[in-house]
Image (cartoon, rainbow, N blue to C red; front, side, top):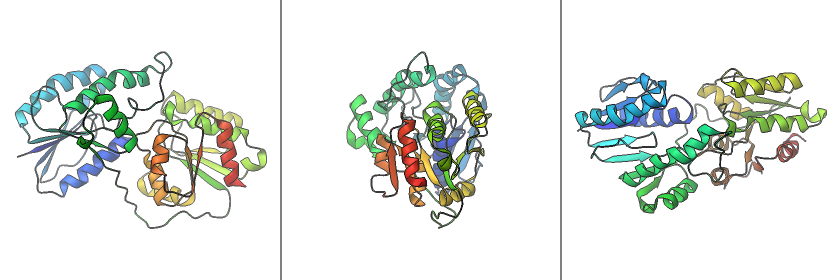
Length: 327
């Protein structure tokens, strides 16, 4: 019988990474799979059929229409032996076996968002949370990336702990090279999308607190272009106005990311993550890491020596930790 892999919202970032990881696994099997996606494109193979529904991404109404009307009908027509959902929620109104991968941390973090200033984040934390927890209760099996999320999910839903399996991301590099400081300026690297909780602004504030001598010894690299949204645009404006050593280098492919890990210190001020994949990648490359003092950072870097934690609300603390590395 056929199995279904479901991930309509995936289009970039961590969600796309997880999707590609599972795609690579299932193409190597002899099982028949149907992958149901939104805009994201994956090639068909002998054992994998791909169905795309790009219109789902047009609005929340389109997504709800798809999830509650189109998708259940499609699943009943396919009648798979398994539905593996990578999109945090299950397919409603069907009786097929369903397994759930939860990678949305907002309902489970202790950091709370305001409905007026952060309406979208508040919605995920308080409304979408209801749908995710309902799905977790219905799922036959649940997959998470971290112990801290498992603790919170079990606490909020009352599900049995042994229903939840922890699976860490599988990181594969092209080269075996590790971090090596080259002569010249010390490079700091922050690969992250332009979202408020990614906390790019803290880095800019910290650089502004450094003395001119320290500032002249460093270069900071953001994987932003400066035109993704209003946040990235405003960050670039501040950098240009204050003439700070921050470079907006845009999207990097895997090989380019590796090169930065091998030559840079990782800065990671984000305070909301399921896992924080760059932390693991930098750790495997033996890069020095400055990370926000959070549950996910401490879990990932627990056994790693080349790390320093800082208060993600304190630019002064980050500046101090940066100076310890700059010397």
